[in-house]
Image (cartoon, rainbow, N blue to C red; front, top):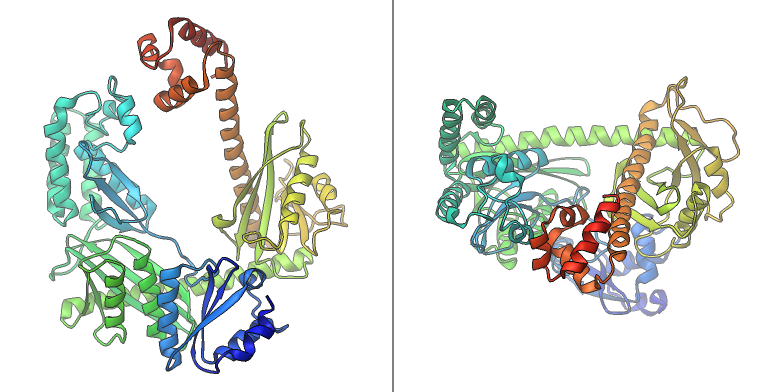
Length: 600
């Protein structure tokens, strides 16, 4: 469809939103405009929006819809709601769009388990969070396991250990109800205490840590007692929970923000049980001159992601979009949440604390952006690139003497990893030939340029020396720049970067911060490749050993995998346990014989 000729003449010159759709009538992109006709027309000019996602949008767009509004402000609000409801794949608002994890207790089970989750939408579970820091989340989870002995294993593993508990019971991280059903009353009592703590009674947690510490000390388990002592000290010193206000903050979020030019920093402080447990920081680029409109959109999208929503959200009293935010939360079934314009002294002090945090964060983010821009300019200069290397893709190969060969592709956007664009390749090249494998991986990558999710990179970096680089420079790469990175020899000091047409490495001696971006990309590609190769090798080993067992059917292999997890689990299994899986004595003897001879 020629959208340019067919649609544009009929578009109104009014404010509103426009919606690009594909051939299946699926929403691809939602945008707002002061003048819909003029804005849509700009997509078909040579000087159109240069963002990468826009060029791919136009390749998929087959039709266009629009909705007019009274003014640009209403268009912004309608755009925000439409994006949240339809979730179009080409819309990007938050620069950091990660969700924040929480701790969950699944109450529907006989023996509830603790787990880490990103979305808090299960009505049969209770939650503590969200936590921005993975470290504080993991420490809090381990603390609950240590103090209350709550399990974190999956239901399958729980059933698998019904005769012999796992090591977590031995090291005191679980009561071990899997092989001792009589513990149910004790387990239920602990779950009840955790429920109280999750609902805000943090003093209960302190009381139990103190009790555990005293028990361990009296039993002369001084190492364990020191663990509880340290945890109690961390809590008292505001590491997990920060007592800060006399007002009731059992389940409340405090919102603050600030802006500098076209950048906006939002801070949300998470209070649970009257204590500050963590915070979220949202750093966005303003889409309009109305700062509070941008804040409203970002906060609404944040809570729409399904994160743990509080009972109350406190904001400054003159915020212009309190009612709209309240309505959004109701739309997404968060009807119990109340948006309150805070007017008392304690509340205003907390909002000021959030605002101060926002000011500190925005200065830090602006500084990091400037430093990153300088590094990317240095990379462009040293490597003599035509374009700024905003999107760098790094490749690595992993195999064991040519077996289970794989390649990895990691993507760095603006100097930082973007895991949504990581890719893995199973190599078709046979034999230990890294040069040919690298050529295959790059060739397959280049062929996919233009496809959705395979945007064109500014620089392809390969893990290898001049030989690897010479092998791929002949590929038709649509003006993509190439470089390779090699580790330094013992007498050298820094990693070597090679570019086509030069036999010697380029000089990054005085541009080490810029070089570190390339080194980080190489290290990440190596890690990603090794992880994938190990997984393929384990799968191959599992299949090859079981395939050699005479009389073992595919259904029996699947049962063994589900019950024991892997080869090591099968090898540890007793004769009786294998017999319970439906295997005959002859097949069990064949299986044991093969496992004894195979490398596990």
